[in-house]
Image (cartoon, rainbow, N blue to C red; front, side, top):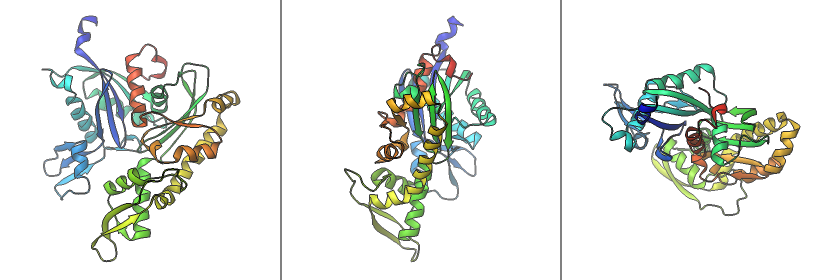
Length: 342
């Protein structure tokens, strides 16, 4: 094997519902929305990632935008495969090669995934010329990315709020002791905002606009120390059919998201109630770690802290915590052998 080692490229992939991130040679080389645009007449993929994202909600009947992943798992096998292929092909050092190299991959998967869904991930990796494929559970990757020493006989709680799922896990001795995966995350928040705008303002807004609202003025609680300014939102009036603009405050968005955040709180409390007493004692001292894009929602850490009476810490660069952990596991495959699924 040694002689051919230079032929193998190592890639760590965080295949997310909202974003796909890829690490190669210790650097994040791909950070793009998990979306593809397909030409309906030829069936060809015409754009992926950021390009396809700009088309979302603005296409005519010949072009269809597809999000190949739903709730953290592959929903459209062919589209997801073509999307990852395209992303890998555009990695600078792989682009330069005359022949496509063999790949060694570590891919993260949600903890609540079924065997069939695992096989789908594995199969699509096989089609991409992957010689070695390892899978790692998202909460485990997030814990490594946050900087927790997962090998220690010490309990740590991690909450990873992604696009499709929220993964809650208590980790000790390089294993998941108890976990819960709920399908409440960034995408549902976006849906809540669209529903709120329709019912309260008679304004029909698209997914991209709702996402913008979430990022600019999204909040988990109405009492923020430094509240964001109100935002002007444009869309279509449901009564007259004319384009119109309304002003929205962060308090309204906090109201819109309240029910979904309650479900995350309940899942956290349920996981805590299943935690063995010795690990619960550790968590009392170490607190809870938040990762994933959803953890950037203003005031979410305070709200969870109030609910659990525990300190809550947001990972630095939470969007990339999972892919960072996946990259570290790939780099030190021998050390993390026990947490990787071959």
